[in-house]
Image 1: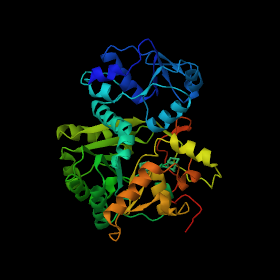
Image 2: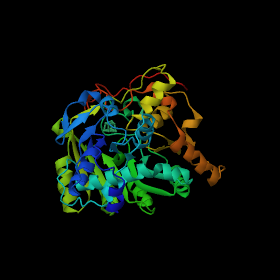
Image 3: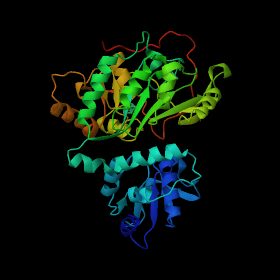
Length: 406
Ligand code: SF4
Ligand code: SF4
């Protein structure tokens, strides 16, 4: 495997890793383990140009353009398909991925900034992303993860929630029959899915969350990640279902919140005692992505650019039986805060649509979208999006105003 990888590298030409973030860090670890010298990082965020990352200089995209067109460029971020096209258009001939290298790496003794569990998930997501074009050409549907929103209720009311909970005046749990039917039809169309992600609001606000988790565990997926703000400790069957070996609890501990609202330490002790897998992220900042904007009048090129660099544009999301390309589009459409665009939504629960048609509709949503109607009402989510304090609570329980397209 590694010899096949090495054979793709042009000798005596520089090696550049395009993407100086978590994926870049993981890939660099792999290069070092195999004693392959890397010369530079490159990153689209020009504010970082000239800085170093993991001891290597970060080039700007325009500095990269001045290098030999035979430079070995490894894409080490989440924008593989888009960047490959861009770099090809700039004349680069050796644009590569790290799949074979990552699969030949032993991460057990790594000292990376993310936990071993996260590394495993990042590597799987990365490998799925680079295979995407192959799957597409073969007519197959490979989806790295499906966000399943099990409730609109949340135990917090963050004014900048990127899932738009602060705009809901009336909240409800997802109907379990619609949910099960939608997931079943979705899974009948998909050739491979790596991970279910159970989200809310706070999924534990749904007292029947365990039924959904148990249902999901019957499908062939690697993991079921459940996301929580850990404002309270789950009890009863909602706690018991976490013992399923496929489950990983993803805990966001918002460190700026009052201590009385943070139960992460207590929960972690309980999880350790019960051998339940988890990731714990102590969060201080977010990107400023949790706002419904008035119509932005963006040009088609601006929309494509926003979408291509948005780290959420590939978070396939299920809400009330409909499939969306990102959680913002799901919740903004559900709230009717954006005009409904039928091409941005796939109805999963309507059994009059046969599975062959349904698969084609999902393929169009997953492979062919260049931007969404919702992108014209969204701040986007890329390296340039402003950072804000995480989980600042809205001053009142009153839902924030938005213009309704009902
Ligand atoms: S960001 Fe805040 S309001 Fe939104 S789902 Fe998470 S905890 Fe709830
Ligand atoms: S609406 Fe567009 S810009 Fe906003 S999160 Fe979704 S894909 Fe990204």
